[in-house]
Figure (cartoon, rainbow, N blue to C red):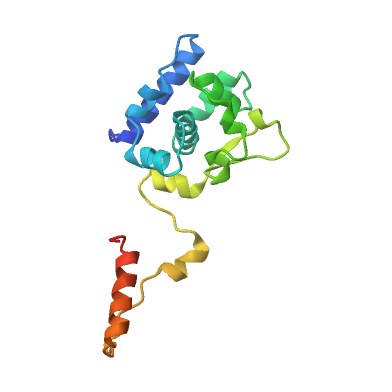
Amino acid sequence: MVHSTPLNLALKVLRHTFEQTLAGQPPPTLAELLANAPDSLHQLGQKFQLLPFEQGILLLCAALELEPNFQTLCAEVQGNPKATYATLSLALALFPEADWSVLSSQSPLHHWQLIHTEAGRWLAHAPLQLDRRILCYLLGTPDLAAPLVPWLTPLPRPSDTLPLSPTYQALSQQIVTLWSGAA
């Protein structure tokens, strides 16, 4: 049984968007699509200043990773049985509030490498792929960059700590406060 998580609900609305587009009917708006989106998608939108259209692209790319039947829907909407992937052209067809600014290398999707496009194709028709870290974040399982893992593993507290001088105690407390986000 599939759980009714916000991500699953958003994917259901996205599937309806595909179906409406294929039927020649007006698809749901991005506001309707994003109303059921998980908090993690909204947080990405805030942190990276994503337009609703860009959030829709992230959801579209996540759908392809999570549910294989979206590949068939992509091919049907694009009118090409081999086009079983997301493209900017597909997103422009699905979402009425499309914004061509996402084509820019300075758009948050590209600048922050939230998605990747296949080189050597026309930009609007190049396959889009969601970055693994973003997919994991949307699923609630953050993926640390492999080179950083050794640096981010907490060290055990030494049992024989020496007392710090008052100056170093104050400095260490400032560091703890900054790192804990309490500043």
